[in-house]
Image (cartoon, rainbow, N blue to C red; front, side, top):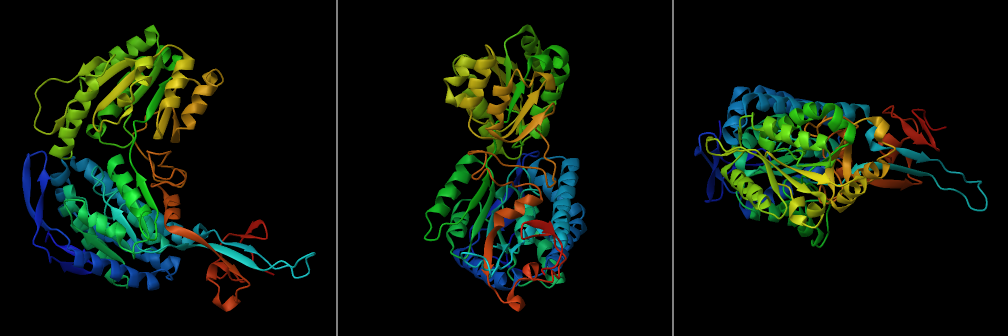
Length: 528
């Protein structure tokens, strides 16, 4: 049952008088759910509860936190069709996507539970004392990663489950030992409340401290601003626009105690089509990329918004085929009228830039809020001199850049901002001839793909979902996969510390059975 209230710890709360509704983009009408904006007092209470919970929760064993994460996954599954119906109603996304994203969300939680049980994520390092060392004795030093404190998480618009209330940011923060306060995304507040109820039930079921999780409703920016500025909050996770992410980043940096903001802000994900890809498989790649550009109405942060090639008959044919294939596909419903409106504005603005030619423009009638796909093409020189063409258009849209030669291709890539992904299509035998191009691409991205499409992010330890600014605020960290836990941790060294007061991960007898670095060697052995 949707109450429209905030979760302040385990308590449902609706102190404020301001309310808002979510929207059904397929029906093009507001839902009948009303949500109460969180008040300043509710934010304060949630933050203080999280601060108090941290004192206890940070010391919980990996096994106990793992039990909590598994319980969250189980409670999410127990929501059944009520969750799927709320998801599809608020997002316009199909049932299959809802079920797939629910599975990914539960899978992420269970993956972090497995990580916690294994334990080496704390990166325990021990350098034993050498009292007889000359000219100076060496002290005993031991180091491991510890949680930083309560985390503010901002739900994303395009992934109501996997990047939102119980998504990767929340799962990784809870795994690290950090309580979480979610600022629910206003476009899918009902979905967020249902997930919040599952997390609260799991917390109560596994004996977690009150305040380990809270969920705040808000249709504007003020609640999020207050959350980031609260001194109890020690880090922020965000998935969304460059404008929103950079605003939070600046806000956090200007605090009396600055805190890290890990924002994933999307990109245009350049695709480099080498000559062999176009001459040998141009038709196949054009068909595959027509599907990739329109997948999920183009509302993926890894949508291929830029395709680069060298002028040739093969490139001309690829562009022609891409245009014809993309027009065969039916448009899909976008997440919200505001997102649809911004898409229409963005694609039209880029369509009227100098040197632009229209490759494909879906013009048939469609239902309201459906994103009509469009593909443009432009010469490399025109692309380089117009930064407007480098901007992301969030939707089923892409630009094909026709470069004069390999040097111009490399120059175009060097002009790009940081990206989440970069893709190379072609034969490995071409790598040597295009080494400068590939090197330039690698310097701009967090994930480089060979002969594939960028849409689709595998949740596993080797995945890196981040990239140089503005793709993310810190290219060293990922927001997907178990390595994302490192965002919420800091290293602490213990010098000459008494054995009985050391964390278990650093004790001589290694009671957790961890793989550690002991005097420079990876081992699970005891000290001595």
